[in-house]
Structures are given as structure tokens and as C-alpha cells.
Length: 118
Image (cartoon, rainbow, N blue to C red; front, side):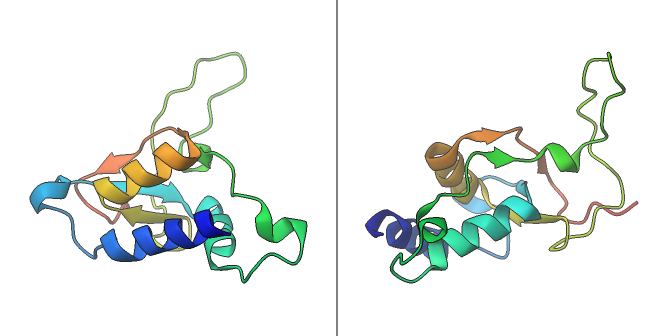
């Protein structure tokens, strides 16, 4: 429970609405499914059930990419017309670094523009 509280406190302290300055000039994108699991994990009250104690697992951004055809290598091309806060969530470099250090996973998706439409 202490880890969850510390993780939440770090995210609250260092999350920003803008990128830039000492934290880099890019948005790091996270699949919103993973973000929802993470939020449930860090905001859970003291664990009364095993699901409350389980971390969200490794960051998984696979849904943000165009799926490769069977037998072909992955293209790693980000899907177009993804909806912010519905399909993805953007964080600054510091938050990405903390989440990636604690949970692993990926792949990293970073963009100068938060909006991926068009």
C-alpha cells in the first residue's frame, strides 16, 4: 500500500499540462486502458481484495499502433485519428520515466503534439 501511495504522490507532484523546460519537449503517450488500470491501482483504498493490490502490469501501448499483418514484422506506425483521453493519455518525460521504471513495458510513443488526429 505504501508503494501505491508514493507512486500516486509522485505522479500528482510531477504531472503537468504542458511539456518543455527541464522535462523535454515531447508528450509520451500511454494507452488509456493501461492508464485506467494504473489509476485504479494507485487510488484504491487500503487493499481489501486481491484486485486492489495488483499493479497494472507492464505498460502496453500496442493498441496505439497499426497492427502488422500476419507473418510480417511490426511496422510500429501509430494509428491515425486516435482520441485523446479516450484511447491515449499524454504525460511529460518525467512521468513517463517514473512509470516505465516502475512498470516496464512500452513501446515508447513520443510526439511533439498531443493531438494525434489527422
